[in-house]
Length: 202
Image (cartoon, rainbow, N blue to C red; front, top):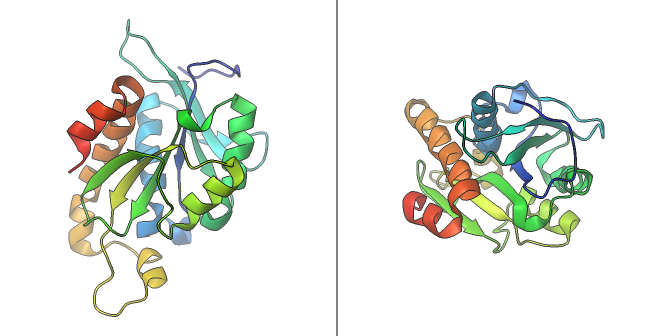
């Protein structure tokens, strides 16, 4: 069920990092979008333009019937990855969400494809989306769900690699990785960091 009120203390802001538009949709850099698509299906609502004009959002509550249901805002910035922090900051202020209630989902070069890590805070490791978020929020103390994409083969440029489509063999496993990452987001919200790391940090 969707909701439209703002300012509730149980709100979580879940950020899918990526680049907008169909030409980027299959890229490794856009795994954050894929995971938020999966979460939107679980909430049973489509992405819609936020009135700020800076993002698309889904508002809803996660949880089984009869159980506590935290309010969740899924968001995807309408700008490119390296400018996504401004949209995240705008929505964090709009929904009154502090950094420790923000979860960023992003691709991770230093993890093999299919691996997953969940952490709180840390460096940007060259990731433009994380760098932009840290700069705009004034803090890096948000959660990260890091979906491994591995390093480029041979001498392929890193930027070319992340802005290219998954290989045919990777696409066979991609749905599993996306579902696994979405499960990790839910686990963070319901069970906290320590239990989530124990379950999901492969």
